[in-house]
Length: 505
Image 1 (cartoon, helix red, strand yellow):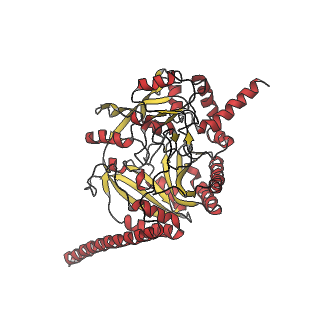
Image 2: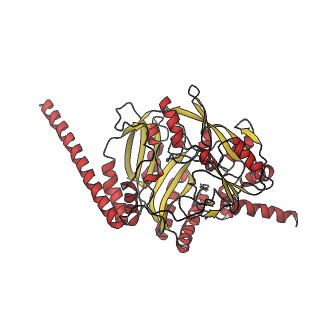
Image 3: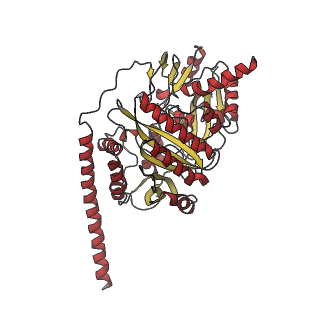
């Protein structure tokens, strides 16, 4: 009798799984149909003409005309460029920063993307040394055959490694934090063309200021990173109310060494529910056999689905109550490297001419999660902000960078949103952005610097209390103010002018 019941139970389970897959396919078709109704069926629009000396970022909101662009392929090229010129220098990589952090008007622009060689891979020591213009995805091609994996990086693999160090990125890695925690050493080219090695024990002041220094201290030329083993990971999810999450994280996630990746998505437009998504080490059979996501993959339905979700509250409701519950009903077991090789093109819209997609990020101490989340929801609702997703990540404290965004153990609130490109739309984003920054600062937190420059200098100084030490070092190692971009134009020049005024009072 027991055997009969067990066999029937298994048959029902198989049937349920089959019906679930059929339902998923049907719903996917349904959503794509709606997406095609709301989105023009024409192919991607060509980018408007820009000259080779026009530098912009992925949002297309920050067009900057530089004087000249060079593409170094050796460290000697960088040294020569610095020594044979005397004006401002800006530094750019993948150009995924979103507020002019990679360019400055009439500057000599160093486009680092061709500076992309692997210099050494020490499999036994689990370390790799690369030129800073290499992307994470290209690095993964080298280390994956050795069954090694990046220790800390952001979710998407298109970024250059030098750019990632310059903004001191983080990812979804439990037990980690800012990328500086995985950097063994760097090689820098200073404002006078000198080459310097820097680490936590050698030229440490330069090490802790260049990482997270947004191109203001020196050119990050070479990077030595610590690696870890590649492992299989299994996805585990749990949906709950927002107010249950902090305790759930503390009890189930924070100290579980089997968890590699973790984030939690807060669902707009109500911001009352959250889904925890963890990837746990496993020996189970892979459901995805590929070791890395294919490069140059053609993404068709993902951007359209993102547009559909952004277009209305109905799209957001469908995502929360239909699409994701079905998606997460499937088992997912894959390689760590596969989960770390996402391509930003899966979200890239066919046009940014009338609206664009952008990010904001805010950091608060872990004990402030509930208070900040409530304030965040209130701000977004009052401003009718078109928030697509808020992803919560966890980070341990920074190991010493001067412009540390994680001075303590923090939760990061990564806000992905859509906005219009008109001046009015940009001003509206500026209003809610400044309110969000004030909310983070009120909790002794910070905001992230790679995004649109909507913070006041006072907010910058409150969020980054070591700013004066950083600026003093910049004046020392870059006395002619050669390394510039729009971020430092906004904040460093205010500081510099204030210091000059004090001298002559």
